[in-house]
Amino acid sequence: MIRKIVIAIVCFAAVGLNAQEGTASPYSYFGIGTLGANKTVENQMMGGIGMYTDSIHVNLQNPAAYGKLRLTAYTAGASYNNVVLKSATEKENNQIYNLDYLSLGFQIKKGFGIGLGLQRYTAVGYDVLSTTVNSNDAEVVNSYSGTGGLNKVYFSVGYELLKSLTIGVTANYNFGTIDSRRAQIIENVQLGVFDNRSAVISGYDVNFALNYTPQVTDKHTLYTSVRVNTQANLTSENTRRLGSFSASSNREIEASDVDLEAAGLKFSDLKIPAITTLGLGYGENKKWFLGAEYSFQKLSTFKNDFVTTGDFAYQDASIVAVGGYFIPDYSSFTSYFKRVTYRAGLRMEQTGMLVNNTEINNFGITFGLGLPLGSGAGGFSNVNLGFEVGKKGTTNADLIQENYFKVNIGLSLNDRWFVKSKIN
Image 1 (cartoon, rainbow, N blue to C red):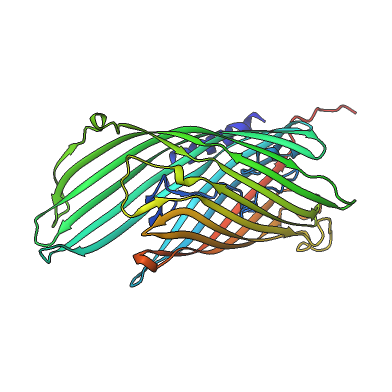
Image 2: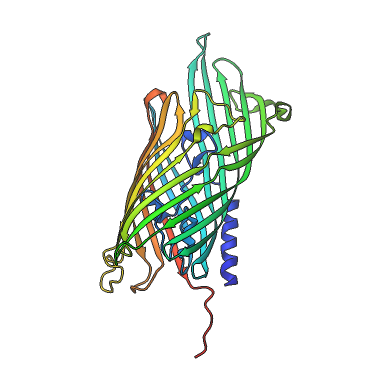
């Protein structure tokens, strides 16, 4: 057991030390970046819904799920995202690879389980050029670029109060750095100017969950879920550097650090509004499930005093997700494909971003397979392969539309811990 724990800790540390550019989205300029998956591949394939729980899988969205665990579960997820950025006149292709999460969940005793892990929370990665003409008919080129993002370490506890009622809580520690640069070059002017900003961000938040899953018939179960991701209170330690550079060689000529303490911006508070999710589903255990969730967030109250934006505002955000799974025959000894879990879903998201008086929405269709490992019907470990096709943003109002195709792969392994030895 100790060897397993050491391996897990080493893996977590490796992810924490590995900085990733987890997105190529120009919309990651706003807020604290584009949200990561924050859910296992199994849940992503069902449109991102998190109400469904069982005894062998980790659920990163729903801490109440740990109260249902019967086996120790190790899980990891990675993704490949092909994104086509499209404006009214141009098109660009980007490819991003990410290690999204590493997690461990296990049962302490019947009805009581815990989980811990590390996952990618947000990602910043953009590189945008804007060309205009000034009053002297000279071309002005503004470039905007940014990298970084936040990771989170979490610890979850789930408890089964009654046979059909489980509760759970997750404590998250969020940390990371976001760097941004704005540079301007004017035609026939020898020197350009730049504005470099860096924010080291950290802070905590807590998630609560309650699942009520009564048995409606001998075979069928009603699934209901309420989850609240409480307000994340983050602190940002900021630095800013202004200067000039050679327009021909890009070499820095002169630069100085801004006294942010005098301006009251050395430290700033970022309060990410709470997210409430309501879920309702129905299904037959180990056979099929169909569910829907609605999430809402009062994002209109969020602000970041350190990062100035132009024609941009926050409004309230929401997500509607629908998804489910189907297993032809989980106990089949004769057909491997009858034991495969087939998942699908869709997601419609109002991101809460209003750019150039235009809402930025996100729509995705998901589907995939849960492939059992091993040849017998009693194996619980599996490889999950998922796909997502979607669109974010629009080319209207001089904006950029993202058309993406995402491939997810997740590994879920099961074992038994805390089993007393018996002597025959």
